[in-house]
Image (cartoon, rainbow, N blue to C red; front, side, top):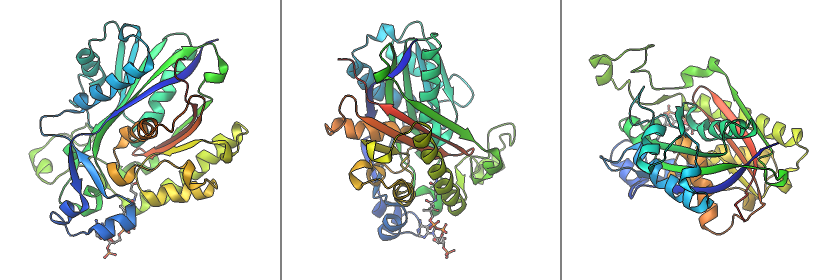
Length: 332
Ligand code: COA
């Protein structure tokens, strides 16, 4: 039987930095408020002509190079994004595949908001375990600045741009395999996080565009409470299902939305500070890119070693959520 191994990681953050100080000149907020309520100090913002696929390509190049797998061997590309180059078509995954010069691949995007990376990890695992694909490039890439309302202090302080990518490949060695992935969704909370304009539920209309309906809208406080409740339940379940104690996790890599959410879930799991990966301070919330960007930080700091166990967790618009138990399994 084929198992799915997490071979490599890569990420990209655009050059421009938007600080809390900068935001306090744009809306009624302060560095102190943002840091206390979210843990965010700054976020990276893409250049005007820099697209989601451009950032995805940069992250993917690193992931492919570090995987030791030849680009010609990549047989599927899946991109998680809520800020694609083009809404509807073509998919950002096909654009990335073309820019990378990948030949004969299956390529598509998925929309699961901030849970996107856990969802595409589960897709890669399923395709590999079924024998349909051997080497899957997964990418979380977001230009959230393009769909952020910089007059709304409740949302604009949170989001940033960036991309992260990983190569998942087939192995016969069970010790290298991704152990388990949970994914879930509950559409009764659909209105907590939305971009109302543009779809068939709210077709394009110039008046709505002026009213900012193409931007992300969020009921922050309710989202916060549901996130803590849902995430805590999900990570406890995945650990219990697999008989793994939280003390055995080398790197807890949560979706980087808000320090207080990460702290609440980490505390519920009795995680020690050194187990918890925190990048929200420097990148803010980059939605589908946040988990791979965080894994990449651990990798580039030299702290992610072969065989170490990561616990990923995420939640996002939909609502969606997910968690994963993933050993880091680079090719020897
Ligand atoms: N600066 C200063 N004050 C702000 C502010 C800002 N940027 N944003 C909101 N406020 C004000 C509100 O207007 C409100 O004022 P009032 O009491 O006079 O009405 C007060 O702060 C409290 O607002 P509230 O929304 O209850 O704050 P909060 O503690 O819930 O923090 C968030 C707001 C957005 C930081 C927090 O709810 C959050 O992080 N939610 C989760 C968001 C998230 O993770 N989304 C992505 C999901 S993937």
